[in-house]
Amino acid sequence: MTVPRNALKKWEKVREFALGLPGAVEEFPWGESVAKVDTKVFVFLGMGDGSHPPGVTVKLRDDTSHAHALTAPGAEPAGYGLGRSGWVRIPVRSEGAPMAELLCDWVEESYRVIAPKRLIAEMDAR
Image (cartoon, rainbow, N blue to C red):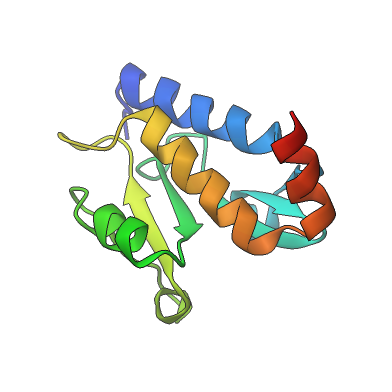
C-alpha cells in the first residue's frame, strides 16, 4: 500500500507530538506503535510501515471533541470494545482528514485522560 507523502508527514508530526509529552514512551505491542504514559496507552499510532492506512486512535471523554472526531472521513469508534469507552479511530490519509494540529489537540486530550496529575501539571507548566 502506498501512503501519500502528506499523510505520512502528518502521521509523523502527530507521533512526534505524542512522544514529546511528559513521561511518554513508544512501545510496539501487537506490532503497532503506541504512546504510553505510566504503562497506559494514550494513543494508538498504528503501523508506520505503510502496511495499513495511517491513523490515530485516541480516548476522548469530552462530548464535543468526541462528536467532532467522529465526523472526520472514515472515523469510527475503536474496535475491540474500546469505542464504548470513548476511543475513536481517525484515519489521516483520506480527503478531508483533520489537520495535524487538530489531531495533536485530540492526542493531548487523550493524554490528559490517561496521565497522572503530576505529569499533566508538568505539561501545563511548559
